[in-house]
Amino acid sequence: MLIAKCSPTFSSILSLDTEYESSHYSYCFPSLLPRNVEMKVNIPNYYHHNSNCQAPHIETPAQRSVKEQHQAKSAFVNPGAETYASSSTHAQMNRHKKRTPEPRPSIQSVGAPEPVHSSTEGMESSIHEVQLRYKLSSVTMKALCSISQAPDRREVLYKSCLASEFRSFPLKQAEKNLFREINDHTAIPYTIKEAITQPWHKVFLLVQIDLLRIGWPNKISGAARKELYQERGRIYALLDRTLRCLTDIIGLRRDGRGVNVVLDVLRSIKSGVWEGAGQELLLVDGIGSVKMEKLFRSGIKSIHQLAELDFCNIERLMSRNPPYGHNLLQQLARFPKLSCQFDIIKDHALVNRRPLVDYQHDQPEMSQSPLWVCRVVLAYENDQVPLWNKNNPWVTLVLEGADGRLVWFWRGSVNKLAEHKELILGLELKHGEKIGLRLACEEIVGTVVHSFHQIS
View: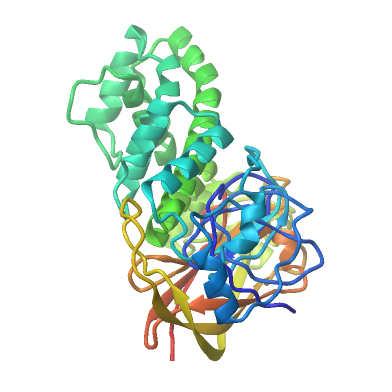
């Protein structure tokens, strides 16, 4: 098993069907590593896919320092290879710099890399590459790039809805009463203070009313409702692309806290209920709001709790006849139940690196940071490979530093966890620092595993 420490470069984090690992301060969902090679290398792309990428060799801190002196700016990881990323040398990635990543790569992982974008020019180049990957307009990219550090859910959803591409879904006269009703008389968490007239208002409110799972108010004609349903699929497809693009942008800033928030919003929208809202039981076929309330009164508030009941109790609580309970347990047996173990193997030598700074500032002075060798073991506790909605889900792991920076990122198919996924990481952490690990299925709420660990 190899351990490589190299500085990452960002390219794409949430491209679909891509496994990606990275450590240090870069995000890339599907960054790639050579298959059949277990290694960790910091890579700055959330979603890459390249199977021809060669495994970087292990270098001494002195060798890495010399290489870093010759690197003018960070490079993006080839989007077509399986990769593992850790955090200290950009040189290994430079040979991929001229390759433009595809919009939807296929196997990646990323870790928290060194600040690879130390100049405005480097950041602009990276943003342009992200724009090409997701095929979004310059106006949209400007809106997404204006998001603040460590944004909350409201800001993430708001900025995503500002995409100029949503202008092709104008707010029609027949829809105005519906969206006014949603804004003024429903329990959506984020209301709009101004008059409801803009296309982004339509998307912003539509998403929230859908996540409430209460149906649309009866303030729209049948013909207009049918037309809105037809637009709805295209709206969500565009929103998915916009959120994945936003994840890459926030990843470029090495904002681990922001990455977690965007992933929460993406997971909520793909599932149809807010993460953490206590409505995950609605994901189960045959369970609506009434039956969910029955289960709540019996102390059953999650899918994992429901899966622990025997079929007789399920049929009694749900007022159903056999073989309903048996069939439901078969379905729930494959609902993802993830686990994550973190251990510190040993501390390593000091490495030279530039400190984290605001991405808009120019090159800071070099400093030394301690490198800790850590082991992360990812697995699922199901008897069979998790399967939900007829698909094997994709999983993301985010390691967040005490100051909210991205320390490491990994993304891959749950199939990779069949015999436990062991990651040996070289992480730049401070002694006594408290880091957070967040493992979850990318598109399924109720699967989050969150833990904290003290570095000592």
